[in-house]
Every structure is written in C-alpha cells, then in structure tokens.
Length: 337
Image (tube, rainbow, N blue to C red):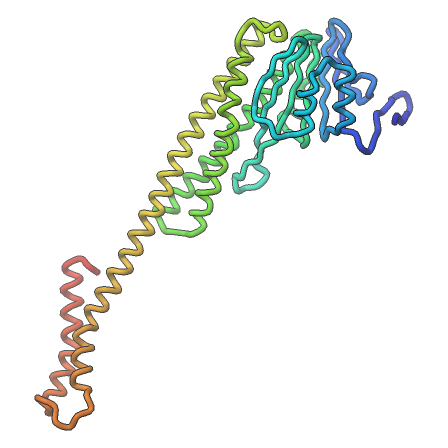
C-alpha cells in the first residue's frame, strides 16, 4: 500500500523490505527517495542506485516485473547461501559478495551476503539482509558528491566493492594483535583460555579464506576489459580491488601459519611442563624410598629384631635426616631440581 505524507509517497508494507533510491543526474544534486514508483530503470543519462534491505518475495517479484532479471537470480536473492560469484546476462551483471564484521572483541568474524545487479541502463541494485557499514559509507558519499553522476553505475559498484574488501583489513589487524598477545602468553605461561582463542582465530581465518578465495575470481573477471557494462577506466579500479584481495589472502595464509606455530608452541610447552612435573614427582619418590624402607623395616612389631638397640635407633633417625639431604644435594648439583 501507499501512504502519502505531504508531497512524498512512501512505499509502506509490513511485509516489504526497506528500500531507498538514489538518483544521480549530471549537474544536479543527488536525490534520495523511497518511492516504489522509482523501482525501475532510470532515464537515459541518469544513474540510479536502489538499495534493498530485508527483502521479501513480493519485492523480488516487483524487481522481476520492472527489470529484465532472470528468475534464477531473483531466487538467489531470496536464499542467501551463495558463494561469491559473477554471472553475465544480456542486460546486466549479477554479483555476489560477502562483507565481514567483528561485532565483539573476540575477533569472531561474521559474514553477510550482498547481491548486486549492474544493469546496462546505468543502474545498480544492492540486496542484503542486514546493515552493512561499507554500503552505508558509500551511500553517504554518493548523497553528497554530485560528481559521481558522471562516473556511472559501474563506478558505484566499484565503490561498494572496494569498501567491502577494505573492511577486511581492520579485522585482520585485530586478528594479528590477538595473535601476538597469544604468542606472548604462551611463552610466559600456559593458560587453557589461550587454546580456545587459538581455535577461535583459526575458525575466523578459515571462514575468511573460504569466502575470499572465490571472491578473487570475481574481481579478476570484473577487471577484464571488454564488458559493455564496465568502462575501461572503471576496470582499472577493479584491478586495484583485486590487488587488495591478494594482499588480504596472503595475510590470511600468514596468520594461519602463525596460529599453527602458536598451537604447536602451546602443546610443546604443556608437554614440557607435564614432563617437568613428572620428573619432580619421581625425584621426590626417590628421596622417600630409602626412608620408607628404613621406617618400615625397623617399625615392625617384633620384640627381637636384628641390630635392635637404643644406639641403632639414634643411627636410624640420623639416616632419615642424612639420606634425603644428601640425595637432594646430589640432585641439585646434577641439575635435576
């Protein structure tokens, strides 16, 4: 249904998505709207960005009616379980990317899918289920930068992609800081919490590596010249995004190696500490072994024991003091204590 407030027609439906439209016209200020009438290709010479959040089936049907989208791509937008990819159609490109975020201090990364349509009629459509900081940042820039109207929808796609990819650098910085903290902690003392942190960071890096590996292929395709929807100038920018992904991928591999080393160091230090404890317990057992024999032999409840005398009692007491003392001195000089 449509609810009119003043002169603005707002598309309002409890079962619909949150939709915002940005129109970029050369020589004019960008215009932001949320009118359902503008969910359509822009006029010639104009650039339009449609951002859809929390999409529903009715919203995808509306896109299918007003844009030449294949039903399989619309179906993908309803089921967010896609790997990063780029699909070429006659009138548009369909791109799937993943944006990462770390909402907590534990560096437990979460991935959010972003589906993008880049049309030959100079429009960009982004579809996502949650708030993504990278998209909001680019949207604010586009709202205030009238010069983007001359760059085209392909440049908007680059800005969104670049912001999504560059958001991975702070996450990796936090992972590296946590890794350094774990390395210092492992070398100083063994804490069971360190083992949990190691496996948590490892899960984060494995998830990022799993996602960013096919994402490199996406930007390798977008950086190639020849696609009519992407100008040659913008293709060079996509090449820069590809280089950033290569750096991120190499950093992830380095982090995984360092985490493996930290895990080996933790297990090694734990094993050494266990061996040290066992050695000391063994030495203590060796110290008390002769004492146990002496006290056990002469503590038998018989009246006529061999060598039974008061003098021998004092000799036995002296041995109970001297033997462990001598053994401790010998062990210390040998470096066993």
